Image (tube, rainbow, N blue to C red; front, side, top):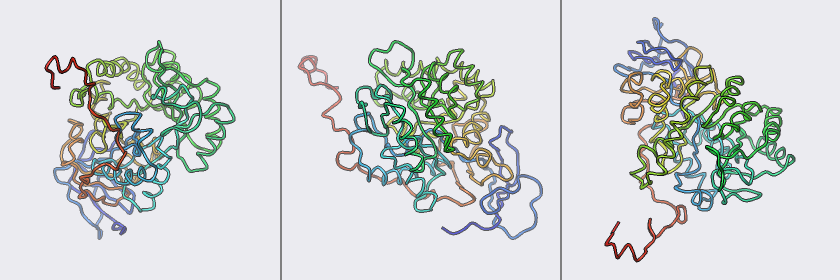
Length: 445
């Protein structure tokens, strides 16, 4: 890839800095891969000038919760038993380009099928395949009762994106193995679904001592730990055990809130999946009961999350892109909309959560995510003002330019009109059981 000109000037645009400041007219000067000036008189120089008249210049979106290797499954059955390692890597390398076209310049994939995330990240960094900046985990650490797939989780060994660990020795060995592989994060599925649970959210599947062990082993080797936590006790214990990032953090109680505020551990609520199912589930034949459950998770959690935010806990935007309800390239703006609509953040606060704050998830806090001197020039130029309405970020036709490290990314690539490889999806005969009563009632749907 050719190097960008030594100096580039983006002029005549309106700048949203990603740090919470209101939009302002300013020219942006880029030297190599970094921003060297925002506003003020541009020095006379030989440079490339980019006219941003009528456009907003802002940091690219950073999706702090994206499953790039999953390829949009509709069920755990499909995800666990209908994927192949080589194809997963090839298809992920294609899907990652959809993120670029949606204005995403960085993302965290905390757990990946067959641990292909490490190779994809390395291929992106080496310029072998185009994609946003990427941080990745390996297999999520599970117990036999953890995860969200119930009885599909084995008592030992690997399943899909997860590794079941049973003892302190297995936990230690697995954390060290993943770090040797080259992961950026260790992910723990702290909670999971059990058939007869009686609590809100999910059941905690790890003891406090086990969580502390993961943190101690990972931190000794300078690798952070992220936890999937849906339930008050799990949030409290993960925060007190020293986790560096918490996904979901729904159904907090006062003790959990106190713990996350004390630790100031960043939270990625990841409401996009729930919001899509609640708001648009009728388009995919989801029943009203399941839609109501996911809407309730948002409603039951927003007050505590907002209190945490007001107390200084960073909130990051993540979308759970990678499932059939959150396909790649379509919904990376959606968490900002939910933050504004349901959490009561201003558009500028939501943009900060999706840019400078979300840089924590890719290990580049203070290095990217802002239009500021010294930051990496990971920028998008968009036709519209997200400070008025963050939903303009969801219109890909408005995204006129994407830069990563000062380099223009190709947005002319069309998503291929693809089919699925044999066995890639779950095969079904239909969506209903063909009972005689259907014929007797004359129903054809």
